[in-house]
Length: 313
Image 1 (cartoon, rainbow, N blue to C red):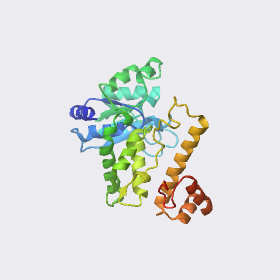
Image 2 (image 1 turned 60 degrees about the vertical axis):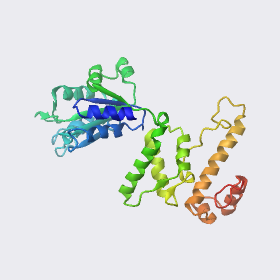
Image 3 (image 1 turned 90 degrees about the horizontal axis):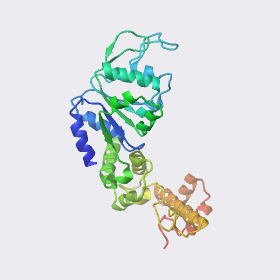
Image 4 (image 1 turned 45 degrees about the vertical axis):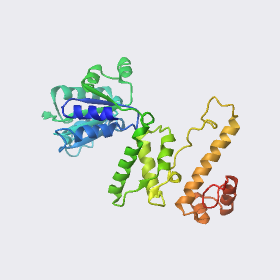
């Protein structure tokens, strides 16, 4: 990530269009925000648009706005995202999901630096810096005729590639601390710490959801952790890779045995976390997870857990 931050610093000083690429949840919007915050436009708006979340019928109005009466339901003039970002940065997330007809209009904005609202005829200056992002293979989309080659090259003046979290686990401590700091500020409460064992557990996870998954895991743990620090038991993650378990495709372990181990591991983690959230109180835990008290006690015995949630062996 040091290489990426160095690239961010260099590109931020320019006004060039930037294409940020990486897997879903890898932190592409964080990169876009960093570019904006380090640019001469930092005091002006940063407007993010998820192109995949807007319907084909509304995407043009969403981006460029519309005049009153432009279409059925347009009861008043509406300012679009390009206009709202005037003087600042517009972040076009999931640009690879944009319809072809809209791609042509975005290309025109990038070339002419102006646009018109839907139903309008007055040109509006597009004083914006464009940062786009995608997890798609745009070259393949261009080859299939699903993406405009001219727009692709207009967006890809500078390209930054964000590696998945599993390839940069050394970034975990700084990311975790940042998320805890942001959560404390948002909730207006003291910042939580994270234990070394909890950090080690995070490093064992494969993070298919990347930075987004990490943020959710940390926020959830920080909210429900009973103590001042997030411990390993507070983390709700899948089972770590285990050469003796189901994740070892080359193991001689039978399917039924691998499945049993995986289920036991899940039940042990789930019940340990549930007990921790309720201070080890069996009755409260049983009510919260929808089990009879006697069934919970029997399950804890089967898993070798004491009633407080710790291992009996």
